[in-house]
Each structure stands twice: as C-alpha cells, then as structure tokens.
Length: 122
Image 1 (spheres, rainbow, N blue to C red):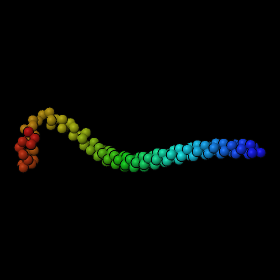
Image 2: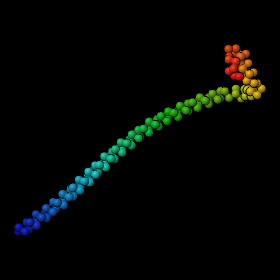
Image 3: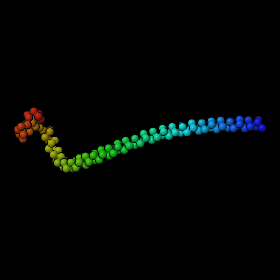
Image 4: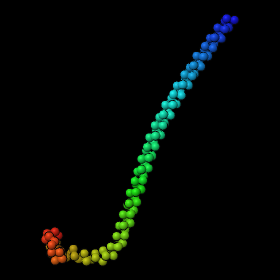
C-alpha cells in the first residue's frame, strides 16, 4: 500500500509540476498579449493624432479653396467689366506705343500733370 501511495504522490507531484508549467506558459502568453494591447493602444492613439491633424489640414485647405474661388469670381467680374474698354483701347494704345518716343510720352504727361517728374517716363 505504501508503494501505491508513493506512486500516487509522484504522479500527483508530476501532474502538479506540469500544471504549474502550463500556468507559467499561460501567464507568459497573457503578458505578451497585454504588451501587444499596449502597443496597439499606442498605435491607435498615434493614428488618432494623425487623423486629427489631417482634419485640420483639410479644413484649412477648404478655406483656401473658398478664398481662391472668391478671388477668381472677383477677377472674372473685373475682366467682364473692363474687357470692352480694353478691346476698344487696344488699337489706340498700339498706335501710341508705336508712334511716340518715351520723351514725347513724358512731355504729354507733364502737359496733363505739370508736377510730374520729367524723367519718370523717359
């Protein structure tokens, strides 16, 4: 009977040792899993910062696009207003440029504005 009891104790000790090893491995796996969760949290937090920054950049870009659209609309209105005058004045300006010297232009300006400097257009 003593021999059977000793075998039972040895088997129980062996099973206990193996169970302890399994628990040890499970604890290690759980620790590694916790570390992975921590790393995933860091990555997720970093991604949230990037997404937030991208949102701010997108808002700024939208504002710039709106300002450019408004400027473009203003320029279009100016062109629409002045286009007929420019088309009418172009032949006159061409003649003016072809036929007058810089000195003649300066003299003409002084006739209209006697305070204009003599060499400004010459």
